[in-house]
Length: 411
Image (cartoon, rainbow, N blue to C red; front, side, top):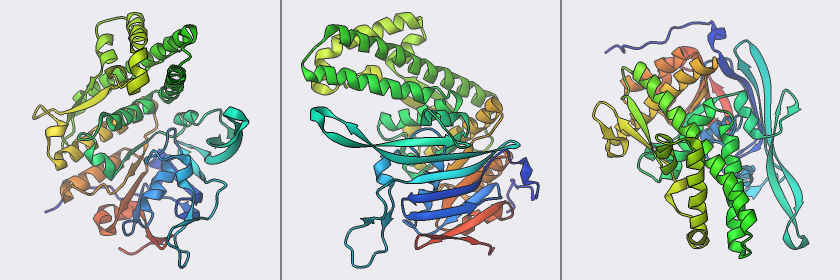
């Protein structure tokens, strides 16, 4: 049966408003050096499991703010020599760091984005010198003050196989998913989260030191409360806006969702002014000083959860089937991408790792057609390139074998 969806065969690639035209990796995971030139809206990476497909997507994800799609530590990304003979464990090729750079098209403009890890020596306690790895970023050869500034340049959305259980696992993963959504609209959100974590860590260190300087603790608690309420307010505002957008723009294939926040501060902001909520937050921290010393402040005040409701069935996502959960996730991501394109004028680049899993042929092709309508670039991985024959005319296909990538032209 012919699909109801189709992608117009056009050579007018200028219609794509957001794309990576050249990608370069140095000492990144299993790639000592890799350069890809891209001139299509879709990029399909095929190969066996473990061949390094997701590594390429992860490298692309470092062109925007955050810790990448795997949330890996910087030190975990160094290149290994997996091909060295007679070795029982992989060996580092380069301990100096890794780098990712790209020529990026945004509308009618092109920008160069680069990011790398560098090692610095820093004095720690007891006059010890400690190596600290930090991420540096450049845009058009100008060093940015923080990697959080990358959010201004290249919005990005990704879905990975690990996210298939997003609605079943712990709340922490859903908070990360939520904060990625918020940060694509509010570029200051990641900075607030980073500042919150830093101040909260200082608060815990003071408590654990046993030297309870009341004035210093009060100062930290004031900052925590201010940042915490600002973070909650941003989450609340963006969830409301995205829900409104999804209600006005329902999907005709994937199940429509309603998002809800389950958090103490968010609930209070529905009823009280922010100043009142900050006072409550600060007073709660004072009461938690003793508890925090023993259970790491494992309280609900900082444990906001994201709940997705399958609208038609009025059922929480965690009670839906595996296929329904995947479809809900895609529905949310598509709505986010459409809303973001309208909000910022530039659509986000999409990274979809093994996205065809749990999708029948109709839903897969419908997804690809909907993405094509966004006029953005999408990177896809698969073990079977023929899954994406539907987009053969608008895609570049690359095959990965033995840490090498070659372009595939065969149908």
